[in-house]
Length: 92
Image (cartoon, rainbow, N blue to C red; front, top):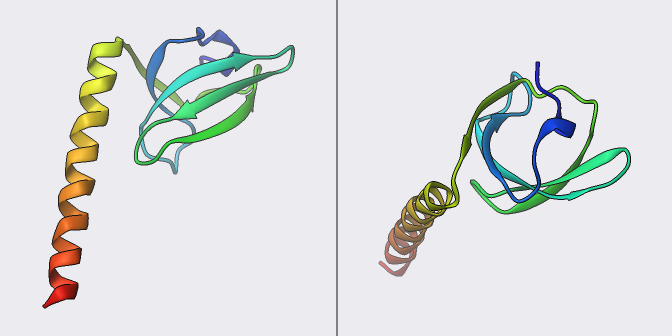
Protein backbone atom coordinates (compact mmCIF):
# COMPACT_ATOMS: atom_id res chain seq x y z
CA UNK A 1 0.00 0.00 0.00
CA UNK A 2 1.38 3.43 -0.93
CA UNK A 3 2.13 6.07 1.70
CA UNK A 4 1.84 9.84 1.53
CA UNK A 5 5.64 10.08 1.79
CA UNK A 6 5.96 8.34 -1.58
CA UNK A 7 4.06 11.08 -3.43
CA UNK A 8 6.17 13.50 -5.50
CA UNK A 9 6.00 17.29 -5.04
CA UNK A 10 4.24 19.32 -7.74
CA UNK A 11 2.53 16.21 -9.10
CA UNK A 12 -1.21 15.62 -9.36
CA UNK A 13 -2.86 12.44 -8.13
CA UNK A 14 -6.33 10.98 -7.97
CA UNK A 15 -6.56 9.20 -4.65
CA UNK A 16 -8.91 8.07 -1.93
CA UNK A 17 -7.67 8.97 1.55
CA UNK A 18 -9.82 6.40 3.38
CA UNK A 19 -12.66 3.96 2.74
CA UNK A 20 -15.37 6.55 3.46
CA UNK A 21 -13.95 9.40 1.38
CA UNK A 22 -14.53 10.26 -2.25
CA UNK A 23 -11.77 10.15 -4.84
CA UNK A 24 -9.93 13.49 -4.73
CA UNK A 25 -7.61 15.38 -7.05
CA UNK A 26 -4.58 16.34 -4.92
CA UNK A 27 -1.02 17.57 -5.27
CA UNK A 28 1.90 17.68 -2.86
CA UNK A 29 2.82 21.29 -2.13
CA UNK A 30 5.34 20.83 0.70
CA UNK A 31 7.33 18.05 2.36
CA UNK A 32 8.67 18.28 5.90
CA UNK A 33 10.74 15.76 7.81
CA UNK A 34 7.63 13.99 9.14
CA UNK A 35 4.67 15.30 7.13
CA UNK A 36 3.31 16.03 3.67
CA UNK A 37 1.20 19.12 2.95
CA UNK A 38 -1.36 18.30 0.27
CA UNK A 39 -3.78 20.47 -1.63
CA UNK A 40 -7.13 18.96 -2.57
CA UNK A 41 -8.74 20.64 -5.56
CA UNK A 42 -12.16 19.04 -5.86
CA UNK A 43 -14.84 19.75 -4.82
CA UNK A 44 -13.20 22.77 -3.15
CA UNK A 45 -9.58 23.78 -2.66
CA UNK A 46 -8.37 22.72 0.77
CA UNK A 47 -4.88 22.18 2.19
CA UNK A 48 -4.23 19.41 4.74
CA UNK A 49 -1.33 17.57 6.37
CA UNK A 50 -0.71 13.83 6.45
CA UNK A 51 2.13 11.90 8.06
CA UNK A 52 4.70 10.62 5.57
CA UNK A 53 4.30 7.04 6.81
CA UNK A 54 0.49 7.13 6.74
CA UNK A 55 -1.02 4.75 4.20
CA UNK A 56 -3.15 5.95 1.31
CA UNK A 57 -6.31 3.87 1.12
CA UNK A 58 -6.24 3.86 -2.70
CA UNK A 59 -3.85 5.64 -5.04
CA UNK A 60 -5.95 5.67 -8.20
CA UNK A 61 -3.45 7.25 -10.57
CA UNK A 62 -0.94 10.00 -11.22
CA UNK A 63 -2.33 12.58 -13.66
CA UNK A 64 -0.58 15.24 -15.71
CA UNK A 65 -1.22 18.96 -15.28
CA UNK A 66 -3.34 19.16 -18.45
CA UNK A 67 -5.81 16.54 -17.19
CA UNK A 68 -5.86 18.10 -13.71
CA UNK A 69 -6.79 21.48 -15.22
CA UNK A 70 -9.51 19.83 -17.33
CA UNK A 71 -10.99 18.20 -14.23
CA UNK A 72 -10.93 21.49 -12.35
CA UNK A 73 -12.57 23.40 -15.20
CA UNK A 74 -15.32 20.79 -15.55
CA UNK A 75 -16.13 21.02 -11.87
CA UNK A 76 -16.05 24.84 -11.91
CA UNK A 77 -18.53 24.89 -14.82
CA UNK A 78 -20.89 22.59 -12.93
CA UNK A 79 -20.78 24.62 -9.71
CA UNK A 80 -21.22 27.90 -11.60
CA UNK A 81 -24.27 26.51 -13.43
CA UNK A 82 -25.77 25.25 -10.15
CA UNK A 83 -25.18 28.63 -8.50
CA UNK A 84 -26.81 30.48 -11.40
CA UNK A 85 -29.86 28.18 -11.25
CA UNK A 86 -30.21 28.75 -7.50
CA UNK A 87 -29.97 32.54 -7.95
CA UNK A 88 -32.62 32.39 -10.66
CA UNK A 89 -34.98 30.36 -8.46
CA UNK A 90 -34.53 32.81 -5.56
CA UNK A 91 -35.42 35.78 -7.76
CA UNK A 92 -38.75 34.27 -8.79
